[in-house]
Length: 151
Image (cartoon, rainbow, N blue to C red; front, side, top):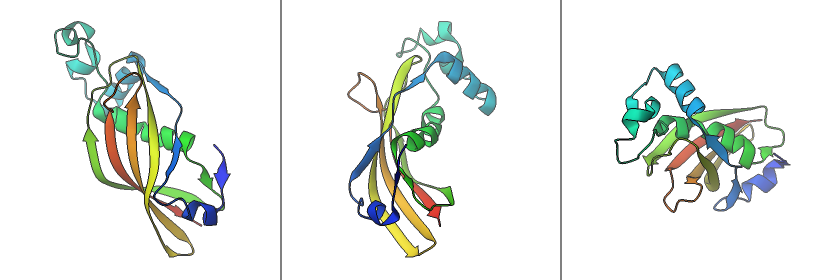
């Protein structure tokens, strides 16, 4: 992704800043996430049992979709020039709207809802995020994510 000067970044408040590329959420990714988190609920990892659910197939963990935001923001939002470190400060809102079926592709849209620049050495940004599922009207999730960059 490209980079942007801090002064220009500060002018983006209230605007859509970027969209990530598409990321495939295949069964291998779902299985690996299940192993890491020790969440092996059948809806995620047992294709035969999942066929009998309303989804008809396995679905990604909501937290897997949420965790993809890290890759998506790196992909879809420019780096702020001069930032030496960024941290995840947390979320004010997360809603899992639609399940992500195994094999689906997702991408995130990032709108810079608000900024706080209390010191010359830090910027706190609040992102409104929608994670889109390719070919579906309803998103996978919406979130309000808070991040902080240090200079």
